Image (cartoon, rainbow, N blue to C red; front, side, top):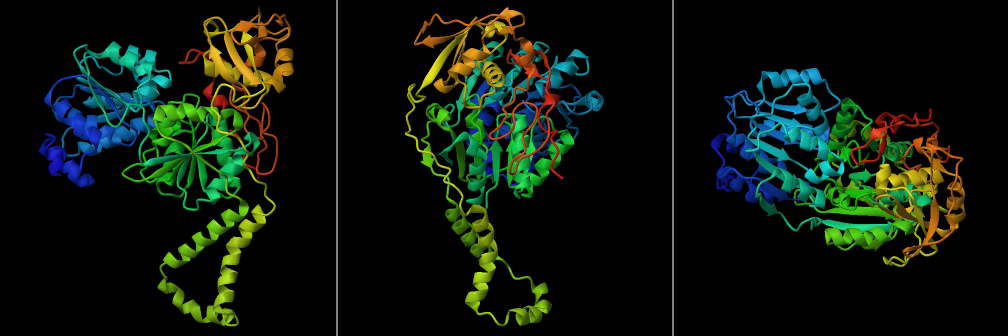
Amino acid sequence: MTAFIALGLEENLLKAIADMGFETPSEVQEKAIPILLERETDMVSLAQTGTGKTAAFGFPMLQKIDVKSRTTQGLILSPTRELCLQITNEMIAYGKYLPGLNVTAIYGGASITDQARQIKKGSQIVVATPGRMKDMIGRGLVDISKIEYCVLDEADEMLNMGFYEDITEILSHSPKEKSTWLFSATMPKEVSTIAKKFMHTPVEITVGTKNVGSDQVSHEYYLVNARDRYNALKRLADANPDIFSVVFCRTKRDTQKVAEQLIEDGYNAAAIHGDLSQNQRDLVMKSFRNRQIQMLVATDVAARGIDVDDITHVINYQLPDEIETYTHRSGRTGRAGKTGVSIVIVSKSEVRKIKSIEKIIQKQFVAKEIPSGMEICEVQMFHLANSIKDTEINPEINPYLPNINEVLEDFSKEELIKKVFSVEFTRFLNYYKNSKDLNISGERNFSDEDAKDSTRYFINIGSKDDFDWMSLKDFLRDLLQLGKDDVYKVDVKDSFSFFNTDTTHQELVMGIFKDFKLDGRQINIEISKDTGRSKGRSGGGGRDRGRRRGDRNDRGDGGGRKGGFKKRSGGFEGGSDKPKFKGKSRRGAPRPDAKGTGGRRRRKG
């Protein structure tokens, strides 16, 4: 407590700190709080997820606002509703001894009327997601013209999600003389841009090194064939019986599919993604915090609100599209002074990304091998032995012991041990006997030549056609019906782009784009040799933009193609609604209706 007193916090906040059991401020709190209390200034704070950023801006804001006034004086913008609710609850806890304090959360998926009613009662602090905040300002339901403090929390993630225009619009309704505090885990160019646009000579503090991963987290990667990705995930879970993890997938569809497969295969798992209602999300997160769920399968966006300190593993079932996002993912583990492991499951065509991530996080990955079936059996046996050893004897079993002893009296101690352990051992042995080795050989070569027999193509569509590299990659994979790793090195220019596939797909690519039209416009494609172009163009009519209206989500490893998953061992039957493209996404590319993706498949039975 004496350490918090030294930061300059008032008694009513110190009492709340004592109630919450905080003893020593984190590094970001120690650096930020005194500066924000002493002067009116803009600030850029770079700190990893889980370092106590909410308290770093929350305590100064609470100490500086006038709780006797009903005017909105503080605005906190966060990327997701989970994080919005988390910040709101923390601010309420910090200000429990501030009579008259009203903190209101504004986010999509809940009644806008109820939120407007709360604002009207008088909220000194509003915590909001950009989309809902912009909507309420447009309707005249909230007034931020007199705010004195504005926080952009998880700024890199907000910009990554395409909220730049929303943030610009929101802040245009706020006074220029306010103090703006920007908190971010990484510092990409977009965050620098927003800092220059909305801030005046900000103080910059950095906890650790910019964009660098936590020292509490070790990084491992496992090289497997893409079709074996799910089986690799199961083996990693079985090899870590006490696993308490977040499993990251790229899309809502894959998130739902993987979670359903894990549940059917007997794991305590659940999915969290944007298609769940707020009530469903709350139930999933409650079960996860209570450890009723050991494997939470999540999209990057939905995971922004996960604030759990004891996560043992982060598993990258699929690597993120933006490499910087890996820093956010790995930051879910190794928190509160504990160690954690960040695992990446990669195929050969993805292994080059490991080097790029290493440059950003300034940490080395360790190449590991997926354990064999017998190794898992051994791990599980010793786990059972330790569980028995550590189990406290329940005295209520005593009345039943005479009958139990009578049933087992013909067996020696050694025979009883064999029988007890055979229950678990036989289960795993039957499952894993004759199982194949999932590991594949591959030199760790990250040069541009690592994708041998690769063909590079030129195509005459680019950013002018509302594509960025991610949406073009999704469009090509969907059109060509290729796997998630089969289109790579996508480079989008203004009016043209480049991409690669393995040479084995060259005939398919050239055939698909023969006589292909997009919105009535002929699309030309040619094989690129270094920076030059070959003469063999293909073009003409025949196809139209209708092919582009397919589901942009990956079809998944071993699953069916567009329109549903094919039934297989541990798989699912059922279709997926094909989303319609509606306008432009915040990233500048066409986007599907969110209602058309994951969360709609029925469980067998």
